[in-house]
Length: 214
Length: 214
Image (cartoon, rainbow over all chains, first blue to last red):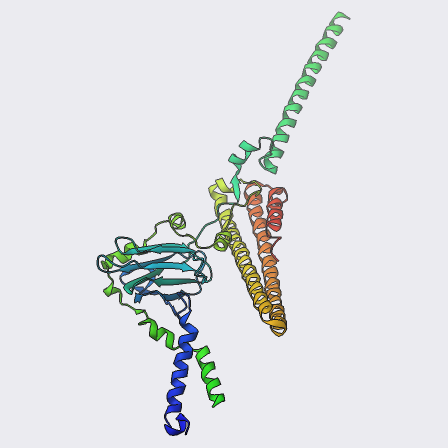
């Protein structure tokens, strides 16, 4: 009896395709949700978004889930991720946001009664998004971001007038210190000069009276 | 035939072409005009933020590492540095330029701290993962894991060297900018001693603050 691939020459091709399909099905049958290939999101400006950049995606969420990736984000860049479902009552769509470990997403929520779920955050080095649902549910994903927030450091110094309140012993400045020293010496000098004047006047009067007596 | 099957199996491993096809249609980009909600909602969704503080309150760090990477411009133990130029309109211009440059350097140092923290955490995570994979795969895999970890160590070492060089550069700038502020205090208040009395103290604090960078 001839082998099948000799009997039917095209059987080899068919067998190969079947093997590929079976192999793929076996390999991916046990995949956890979110193991589908990720769609890289590219944000762009649009007249309908007055500030920042955004992207709107549409899909049908199912148990496997749709994965998205927003690469190269800055820590100070605000990012908002929205999922909208249409129609009432819409099936609940679950939105997870994180770094790729879907057993421990950083944010996890499902659409509310209005068919919307939103997460706002900042993160460094990209973020991954997973949209899934128990039953196939159409959804829209809106991802928005703006330029990095410009956090200004507070002044490193304190105004001198405020500083001296907390540090009464502190000289205001070197010049201020020297001014106060010269004022002190002026006072001392004045007192000495006054004393010398008094002594001088007394001595003069004394010599005058003793001269008159003699 | 065996070789062909092997190739097919490899192709199957490399390209999971069948799984997405079975999972349903892939998500695709949508025009903003087709948004489920009112297009004006997009602006509202984007949440146009008037102040940096309002944005910071709404957009929090996503992960624990992001939280630790957040810039901290008011570290504990920062010295109280007085300045007369801060409250004098004439001197303010001179002081303002130097202060602006110093703030840019402070931002740079905090960014450097954050990126270093992130890179070191990722490298550690990667090494642990490689070691774990190596331990499950027998002697050859374990040896490969050791070799890969050595490559990672080399890369981290190169990174640390770049960080050290950048830190030295930025701390050198801090010193220069404090001396510029000192020059302003000298010019307007005849205070020759500002850097030695206050600027040097702040510089020493900054050296200690970033001493833990590799």
